[in-house]
Amino acid sequence: MIAKPDAGPEIPGRTSVPRAHHFRGSLGRFATGVAIVTFDGVTKRHGITVNSFTSVSMEPPLVLVSIARATKAHDELAGRPFTVNILGAEQRQLAMHFAGRPGPEPLWVESATAPRLSNVLAWFECQPWAAYDGGDHTLYLGEVVDFNYRNGDALAFANSAFTTIPESQLGMEDLL
Image 1 (cartoon, rainbow, N blue to C red):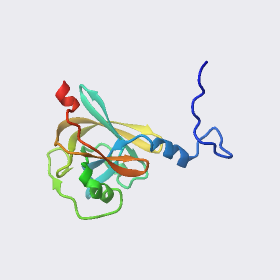
Image 2: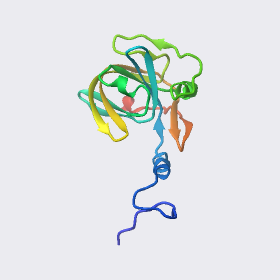
Image 3: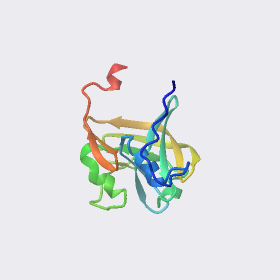
């Protein structure tokens, strides 16, 4: 006997197409890290808070970020080098700053590739590799040309709230 998949809570009047808020709520059950994509635009420096970031390939080293088309800096990112800055648990205010709730001006680190933020948990400087249509987002792939990390707890996002992922005692990089 094959079990029926859980359809989730009953929603009166629900059609086969899920409502956006219910779909978003379901997606929010997947905990993610929090990152800021930084780059130099035509007239100014930009940062965009994202939680859609993933590794794609080890050879060549490729990463992917998903950027909403409605984001003010979306169009300027196309074809530009960028840095993915992974945030530590203590950097919630930085995430909010680049999500549209400005706070103190962040500390920047200059680079030959793209600007990055100071003291982040990890960073990946990228040259543009490809961009793909993703509905109301664009999927930007970058070839990693430089990277580094530090120890510390990670800032995470789940169920529409920030949380912390404690640093593990033995990371994957120590196993390989």
